[in-house]
Length: 250
Image (cartoon, rainbow, N blue to C red):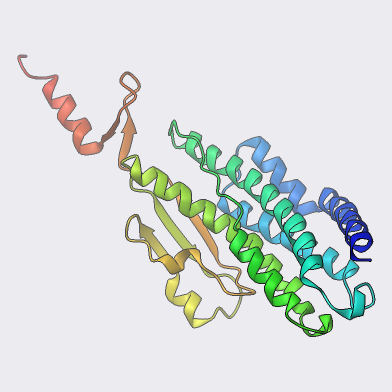
């Protein structure tokens, strides 16, 4: 029975998700900004929220007590559905965010590729275990709502963190800015709001709670300029020393 149920559910979820994804105005606008080379991490965050929200709505549309055997989301069902749908969710967000990261690198004159992040299987497994632990799906159905959106936002947060750490290892000092969003942000988010220069970036800057809409942005290092001849990276101080050496002997 389960073997017949899951493929049909996944197929219906994929079909309706693709329909909503293709007609989503915000996603289409962001893709245009990416193609025009003007998208930033603000767009990446909006993109992740929209993708997560679409998936959450489609999951709740097709998964209910009536659609499940005994009205329960058994582990075998949850594992197959969530790994498939959240895996695709991750792929879409990484693809868009990677394009944005490489735009930022290019616009800053950085000859660096963007860094992708792998699928966070532990977060998916946590959702699977939590949902399948309840005997009645209606008591845990909320896990397919906001937590799905938060999972999506975390993909962007992890992309920022990975790329900042990579650039820092390359000798640069990228900065991170976290801005609160909404009319009444919580104290935790308000305290994290601010601008940070790597490596002085608290781990919580990349974290969020459910319904958190804070924007985390990345800015390339400003104290590094590329020597187009040697392809090395020079700080402003190093660059000045090079210019000074050119006057020796005059």
